[in-house]
Length: 232
Image 1 (cartoon, rainbow, N blue to C red):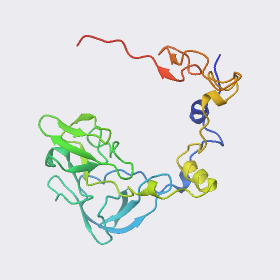
Image 2 (cartoon, one colour; image 1 turned 45 degrees about the horizontal axis):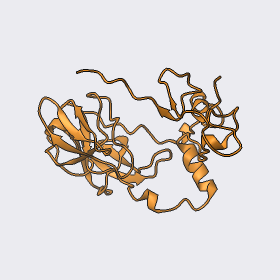
Image 3 (cartoon, rainbow, N blue to C red; image 1 turned 180 degrees about the vertical axis):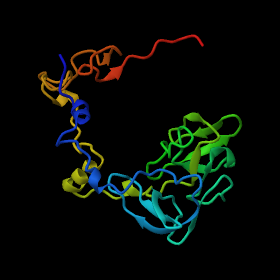
Image 4 (cartoon, helix red, strand yellow; image 1 turned 30 degrees about the vertical axis):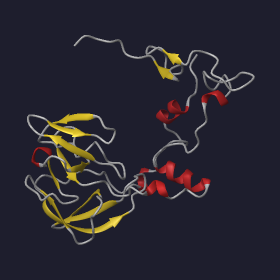
């Protein structure tokens, strides 16, 4: 039978895992292609994000964007096809030279940025051609359309994990902004009614921890069975 797992409760929303979006500053999308040159007027903390955000003024139009390491107030930020390789500048991936660190990459041209947005992370441009190959923070290689835009540099706030939370309340409010639970309880520590791995005279899984990919949501815990090998 299905179990009331935390992942299921988070999907349903409610008072436990509702993100306080009224405190969030803005979507971290790239400015429009015709924005030109703007000036960074402030660097601010963004609740719900691991990185700070930069407030950029484009001739009276103020927008928020993800801050990069090396950004400073008063700096010019370019959004152009042939911008300088300076932290924060936005340009198509096809125009960025190999070996340049990039972040906030678009998955499709014009979507505003979907990949590499966590504090302290960056990808690296490996090769350019019909597709632009990016080495992701995980080490995986991913191909992008050359028209997809990205920001130059490393996402700011990379030292956030060096400072401990200090107390439970700080961790509670930090995770609440991200609509997550700050408590992680292992399945073997639960009761049988709460998790498929629960129960027993001592903490152990008790059943095979590898489950079928066709298992119902309440049973799909532990290690998923591998995909069948297919000939290319």
